[in-house]
Length: 562
Image: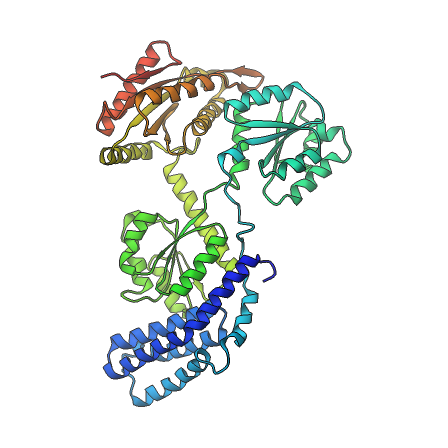
């Protein structure tokens, strides 16, 4: 437990102590269920008793009380044999049961002080990947991602050109000239990427190794992009040995440089995964929620199976962690109910249970689950499995909803969002504007410079839209060189001002094909909710305004007037 922060040690210890204090009450509850089962002689009361013992076996494993967990499992198996054979236990059977139960009572209600329980020492074996002091891949905000360092051992004209072009995309560059300055700058936690002029390592015997050492010692992900005036194997190899992640030759293609920066910085800036925990045991839910939260995840909780669908609609989790046995319905039955809803078909379901029966585990997987984890499970193992499943789920959803070139919403999902946002604004009031954008003379770009250059132009435009617009605004690729933008809580006048600023800045972006540099503009049409009340009306109005912009000279923004 030495790798954990003191705050996590304290929290886990407090959870274990709470669990110990509640063990007598848990045992008393099982005793009541036992008497009910003896008196009722019914399958229902026997099932309730078995599930309460299963819960004790699972919680014992979770908190490191192995003996309690193993004895509870044996008692659970004893009852399961009667249920499987459809036999109601007789008096001699209950005598045997009481013998097993007395062994559990000795653990739950020991004569010695509960603080002296040896099982508490098992907490020292608990390890959590990620703590409140050092979370896994913390999300960087836009300000941090757009702060860059330019490292060079001399003053040069390259810095001025890079600064001007990158400023169009919202990046701010600070020029430094030594490793010492870089270390001090990184200590302020402002930057995750450094653009290095290759002369910095060419003119020094130690600069390359110092950069690599800096990268290895940095507590967060740090990336190097090297720029050079020549392109040869020896220089490229030298930059790789210095920790280089990318290599660009001057004159720079700004679009490709911005695209590479986005890819490198987004590795550590993805939003946290959202996990829904479904379990009727509050202690176990608190424990696993705490472990996942310390790994940087968001957690929601559902303890009542009847409310799970409602919680799914509200919380929209990326993964479900589900207990095997609960009142009202089993985890297998609940998984089947979840899979009946088309909206939740692709959400990964992972069972977490003390159930060791291979047949039961296979039955759970057949119900629509994606994995089965057995308690006890090490926290780091749980985190790795959940991260892997959630990442795959997010990637699949991204591919289904997004345009493969730009990463923006595809045509179908953009139109869907227009409908959703119109319903929202009608219900709650406010403003809404929709802008359609079309790159000017784009066929000439493809014909003159090639489709690869055309793709880079579209990616540059999508990147600028994402940078210049608010996070609440919705951007999609309508098709080809056309884009759609839903401007939330924005009237037509403000929408015009926003899109005009984007248009003017994009016209300044320098694109490159081989040795040729060129510029591209776009035309934009805007329509607002005040003039159009249906999605089709809004789309048609924006399209008409864009057509007017095209036919009246291009490179302009036009607002639709009825």
